[in-house]
Structures are given as structure tokens and as C-alpha cells.
Length: 193
Image 1 (cartoon, one colour):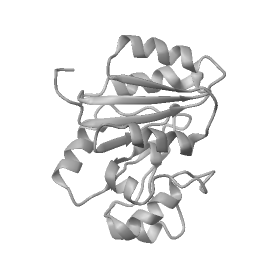
Image 2 (image 1 turned 90 degrees about the vertical axis):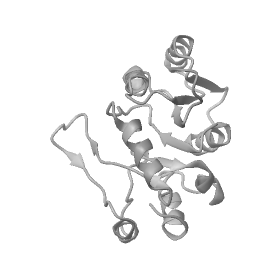
Image 3 (image 1 turned 135 degrees about the horizontal axis):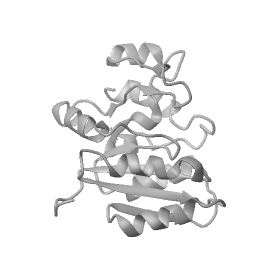
């Protein structure tokens, strides 16, 4: 990375994901878009995840490693990460997912060209079933309608404006099993997705 300030914070929380972690990290570090900080929160992992994270943090200065001594959960870790993120644009990444190499570049350009949009997501392919592709509604109105009966965005594919997320209170601790579902419901009425 040049001496440019990062334009995106990539936010990842990790808990006992050593099996997929390196591939997930590599998919972010090898993005065509290079001007990002990679904020990784180790949420009290008891497997080899922390060692993998420390090794990567030594090699790449874009990685900012935060260590929770105890597991505080995904929602609390993501809210902590939001507070620590230095960029207005935050891209979510899960520690068991792989991002296509142009993800950040495409999302950054889209958000730059559409300042009225608060959240941008995408489709994903199941690793175990490469012919199975999950797609999602593409317009704000279709997203609002879809969210009445389903989660209309895939959390690990999204990028959002940090201040907009914070303005609705961040991630809701009451959403224990779907940390993003309530968030998108709030957004449907406040911001454009």
C-alpha cells in the first residue's frame, strides 16, 4: 500500500475458525483494491486462530489485530470494531468466507458513485456446492419487500457507511442468532440499501 490513508475498513470477528481462516485472510489481502485497513478481532479463540492472526499481522501492516481475552460474542465484537474502524466505509467479512478479488474495488466505486446508498451487498456461492449461487434483491424497494419474509442481504458480502450503522445503534444485542437481520430492518426505514 502506498502512503495513502485507508478508504475502507474491513471488519472481521474470529472465533475458533482456524480451518478456513488463512484462506479468508488471503482473499482480503489479495484484493485488487489496496487502500484498506483490515481490523480483525480475535474473540477469545481457543484453537490456533490467534497464532494465525498474529503471524499475518506481522507480515502486513494493514492488519490491525484486536484481542478479546474472553469470548464476548459476535455482536459485541462487531460493535467494538465499529467504534475502532477509522474509515467511513466498513466492509464485513466472515472468517470462514472467501471474497472475490475485485469485491472491495467494485463496492468502493459503487458507494462513491451512489452517496445516497448506505448499504451495498452481493451474491455468494457455496463452497461445498459451487453450482449453487444465492442472489438477493437489487433495488431498495425489492429489498424492503423481501425483508418482510427473509433476510434480504448476505452479511459477509456487504459494505456500509459507518455513521449510518451507528445512527441506528449498531448491532442489536437482542439479535443473538442473526446479528444483521434487525439491522437491515432498521435500515429499510431510515436509509437506502
